[in-house]
Image (cartoon, rainbow, N blue to C red; front, side, top):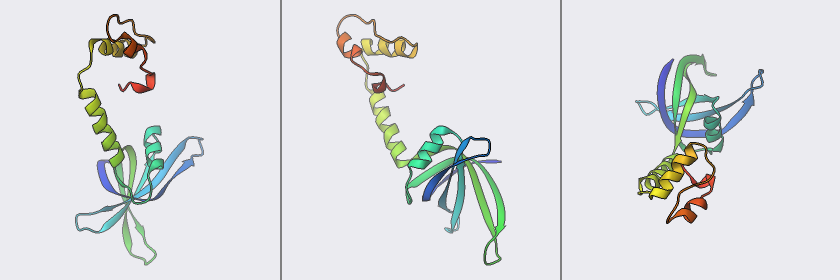
Length: 151
């Protein structure tokens, strides 16, 4: 297998399927241009839950980059010509939405944090539920919800 990063346009909709073992996976397609500018269709399959949900959220025509392992094969087209078959098992998906979100997260995390929020974050990572910080800013720290914290 070859590790690849393929960028192109999402084609159609992703479909969630169930294997005979009962495990779910998602199949989809994207159209990518080769070095000669000719469109190549890439069959994508995902087994990881986060990758599956990202593929299921995409719509026809969305720009997307898929990373994973590639297998190249051939098949006979209806016109009896031999064509290339490209299959990728996706381990990561990157979309314009994902890039925007990561940039926003970077801006938030690059802002200096106060001593009380820093100690809260450390306690939160260590599994403690409430901040024991004292002094100024305690009420701000105690009002932070779990969903508001980005680790």
